[in-house]
Length: 134
Image 1 (tube, helix red, strand yellow):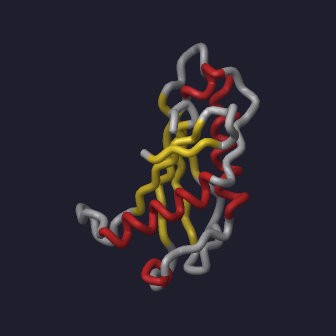
Image 2 (tube, one colour):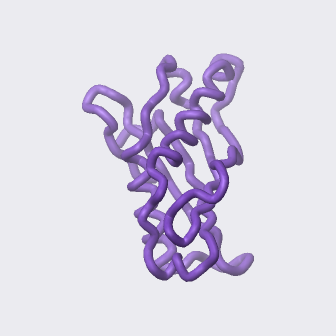
């Protein structure tokens, strides 16, 4: 996972992305891996950490995001899973999900490479890990 400081004094956000391959069981091509890293970099810049205690930042949120060929969102980001949700962090799970969704919405449209634009849309799994250090 890659990480980036949001503010000098704020925790970093690690954001990983992977695109769904065109065929089941097919490994993503180097071009697809590059494209997904580019999308993750764009969205990372739009992430705003919610006001939660440090324990809430231990929650890792995974979204499914679908982009049209022009980079605009097709529907809203969908929560796929969250890791690190415990009785102590449960009160912050919703805020962490909302922060991840808002980052995607703020950055839309994203710049997609031309080879991805040939498809009708592109699905991405984006994993937000605010507790990770860059």
